[in-house]
Length: 388
Ligand code: PMP
Image: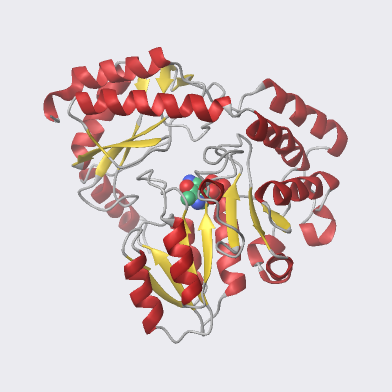
């Protein structure tokens, strides 16, 4: 078989303006970065609190390397579960108000692991149609009957749950939707799931650190308990500024994952120094609420400014502020126009989002200044011709 077949598919993707390429970052995360040799102001990192390059985290990482070395060395069940991992799990459990927490090497693996450990063919998985790819992949891989409900629509979920005779019913949603920035209606989803005898799993990758009084995410913001959200997943590579992910819940849930989650069992533990640095990060996440306040005010500033320019925003109160464009080529034009003005904002196109809903995904960080947000708005003003 020849590789020409692959070339044809690549060509097709190029012709549809959907070809993706990686950019070379030559600086740490932060508002001002060097990308492909050019200094620019970035609005596309998930480092929402500005912790990825924080001196306290870097110091903790160095200390972690000195104490624990570099590699995890083995899987958690063999000899890779260090006291750094263990201490972080206990701290995350306490912070989220759950009996236990379990670390995974990243969010993608956590989602595959959880859904596959909980479900098999006799079961049903009910997913928001805009869920993150890792949740959808986890559901498909599990072999459970797979259903999608309308975006953030508890009535649509209820209909599907009522018709289902599955043994176990797992309802799965993003807490903050990664491409739209809106927050799931968790109180309604929790009520609907409970009434149908289902479990609600929330992936709060983009809410952790950002929402709630102590940054514990959308579950904290809504004041929901473990009974409402028995399976809570968070990632550490975004608001926390490090890497990895965790699942928090009951003893039975965590033991089930340790025994059955294949993406937990059959992989090397994350480097312990990362867990050590994440402990330092958790302290800042909890204590430095000014980061969340600053974010809120930058979000408001951006929204008011962009709307005054005639751009269409989505109903988002989170640092994910997509500008809806529609056409993929137009989204690319804008992204490239911003880049020539020294601004780095990514264009999100199918298949990441549905056809016709290409967008600029602006993300804000607590380390952006008001002047930097104004610079973005000024550039958007110059490029407005094709949009308004
Ligand atoms: N869930 C959501 C909602 C995400 O946005 C992401 C990352 N983009 C993940 C899971 C995967 O997390 P990680 O990057 O740690 O693999």
